[in-house]
Image 1 (cartoon, helix red, strand yellow):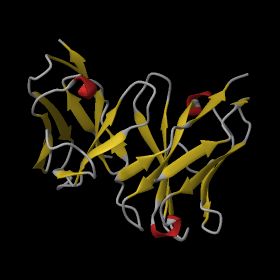
Image 2 (image 1 turned 120 degrees about the vertical axis):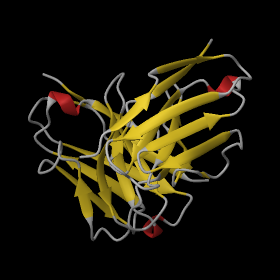
Image 3 (image 1 turned 135 degrees about the horizontal axis):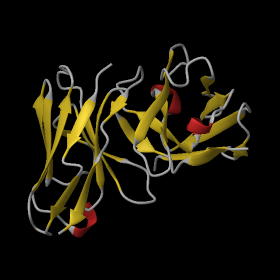
Image 4 (image 1 turned 90 degrees about the horizontal axis):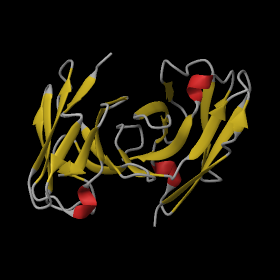
Length: 121
Length: 103
């Protein structure tokens, strides 16, 4: 059974930093690209970032480019999102999502339950 | 940047009836389109990808069609568990969602 379990979400002050983690199991982690997708409270879905199967390619939404860094450790079946210079508008539930392909087709066939990041003073 | 527009915002349907949800792209996206279902307090669930391919385990009452700029998700006979919010997605961009509620 595929499982994605996010962690690391907390309340953080504007300008602060945070690192989210996603532990994957039930599939061959290094065969697939992975994504972060977020959802502000009561709002729709927003794609955040993509990393290819080997970590060699990364992509970001304009709203987070230069502030967030996606990475993965295939030896630990784990995905990460380093979030710096956090803003109030980054407040959201952050989902880890598996792509259906290795390089990234932007089709997300499995999702975690999300970890909540709140940016507030 | 491609904009995805879903209509209607809310669809009221009786159980057993057909539901038709629309998604329009601001420019052609070929068949690069997915549909997701999200229930309250749950993560989204992939229903359709490639505009018309059902994801693993998705019931046959869900079907997708369209290409270019106009896409449709059809639920042939609504079951109680189908009342939810539905999002279309083209690569990095999601539509704003259609809420399917009980009439």
